[in-house]
Image 1 (cartoon, each protein chain N blue to C red):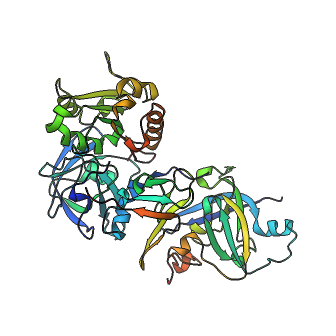
Image 2 (cartoon, each protein chain N blue to C red):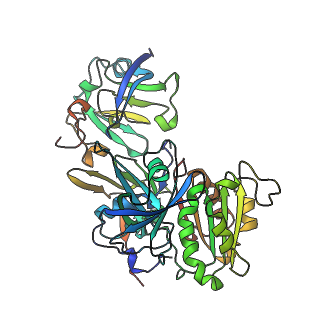
Image 3 (cartoon, each protein chain N blue to C red):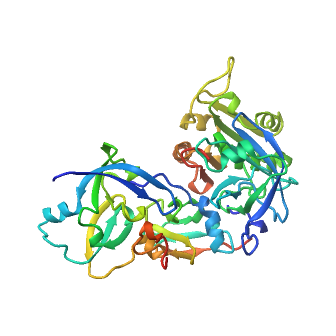
Length: 254
Length: 89
Length: 136
């Protein structure tokens, strides 16, 4: 179902604006969150993204999309960038950027992969690696409304240290919050690990998620292969196509 | 079919937003090839840097193709029979 | 059919170039000969590919060893993501003219725009004259 918030309309033209970095937060060894000040920010919906553009000294421009990880209620815009070694933009954003630096940004963009509490629940979120980014905006937006909206997050990472926002997710999933977070680690598990220890598959989605009859809104985000497999599994479990929304990050996962 | 892996149409939202003054990804489109109705954001997006090709996930018809050149935008929509931009409730 | 092997530089329209790539396949000259054509039947060609993709070019840019149907890349069978099993290779033009997943060569009396050409890219696409867009 479509959200009906006015920010889906947006300004007449989508202009490039300057985003100034206020803070850089280290999330994992490869991922950082950037807290940004954007002068004429018009607001956004959880799930939307921005385009970031870097211009080199020779005039060469590189552009990438990043999900907005802050909820619309937050005072500053936040993006989370995971460094991709061969990337053109992420090495700068994830390694070099410092408070006081600025870069070009435009948004919010995207009207399809969005969710707000007015859309309703239950909410079934499936994330692979950095695919957690847009889903985190949804969960951070959901937090004050938790009493009426049951939610499940199934989050696949390579190792324990790769889980982005782990502490905050554990806090959001406190008893009584209505949110269940299930982690699965695909490459290596710490001693005594009781969470999932394999790639997301149909059986895991069935045991962790809502039954199809619950008519949960499903959002799947991450590397293409994970998204495709999870979406197919959800369909085969009886979830309606119209209730499943996917955001593929491409083969490298963002 | 031999294509490289597509992204979701939603990844083309920025490019569409340069041409259309509203969010195209939430618009429903009827495929001229097979009649399937889908939101633009859920079509399969191909193309890369030359432009964007939004294909029907059912019959692979190119529903919309666009390219931005210095002269401006061209969008070929022969693969789209009807566009339905839903009214805000 | 007799195989040909070439080592060429390829020029992508979004400004990168990849040097010294190795391809193997059948030249268009060989194909025309095998089809019993001593001369190309018309001055222009439209290359038809999977998924409705088409690209146009003058036939004189295909013959004389300038174009081939490539089936192997760097010594290996051409992978689907690189246009396999068969793609056109016309390295002296921008790489979008080297159409992937080629199915059919159509000869035309007049030049017609293909897929990207209809959307504003150059009809010919000479990288040395930086002919990326129509009017360049």
